[in-house]
Image 1: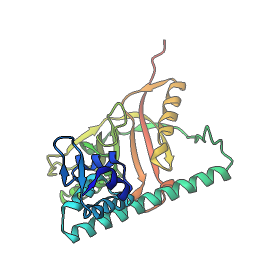
Image 2 (image 1 turned 180 degrees about the vertical axis):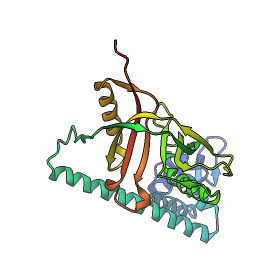
Image 3 (image 1 turned 45 degrees about the vertical axis):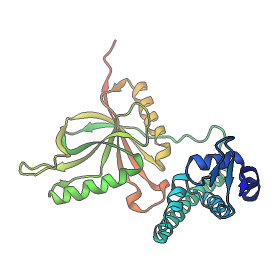
Image 4 (image 1 turned 180 degrees about the horizontal axis):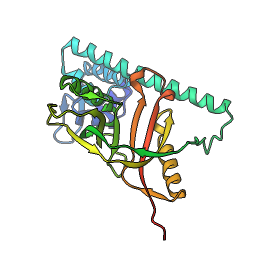
Length: 275
C-alpha cells in the first residue's frame, strides 16, 4: 500500500485534494490507521484517480463523476458524455459570439470602457381595452420559451384564438434568474363558452395610456430600453401607472441571431398633476 504522500506523487494530486475526494466519496483510501489517521491507498486505485482527473478535464462536476464511478452502466456513461459534449459545444458557441462582438467593438472604434448606449424612439399612445389569457409563474428565466410553447399548445387544445405574441410582466424587485416571478399574457378573442385551464385566467386589461419603445438585439441589454422609457416619462411630465411589460415580437422561435431579436417594451403612464 501507498501512503497518501506517495500516492499523491503518483497521481499528481495534492494530499488535500485526495482528502476532499475521500469526503466526497469519490476515492476513499483502502485503510485508515485508527491511531494516527494516516490514509493508505492501493496500486489499483491509481487508475481511478487518473480517471477522476480526466473527467474533471472533461468538465464533469464531482456529483457527475461520482455517478459515473458508482455505475457499471456503459450506456449511462455514453449518454453523459454526449450531454457534456453538447454542453461544451454550446459554451464554445457563446465564446465565439463573444469574440465576434469584441472584434466588432474594436472595428467600430467604440469606447471600450463606457460602451455604446443605443438611442430609443419613444411613442405615446392609447392601449385599448383588451382581453388576455394569463398565467402567473415562478420559473427559471432560461425555461421561458418552454412555457411559451406549452401555452400555445394548451390554447390550441382549448380552441382559444390567440391574437398576438406573448407579453411578460416581471414582478421581482431584483433579478433572480433561477426563480423569476412573472405573468405571461397573450391577447385573445374571448367567447363565453371557452373551457379554460385551471392554471390560467382570462382577464380584461383596461384602456390606458402607454409609452412604448422597441429594443432590437440581445435581452442582455434590454435594460437600456427600460431606462429610456423611464427617462422619457420623467422628462415629459408623466409618471408610471403600472408595471412595464415586454412583448416578444421576434425571438428564438425565428431561428435568427440574437442581434435580430425585436422586443417591444410598454410602460403604462399617467400625466402628473400640476403643482
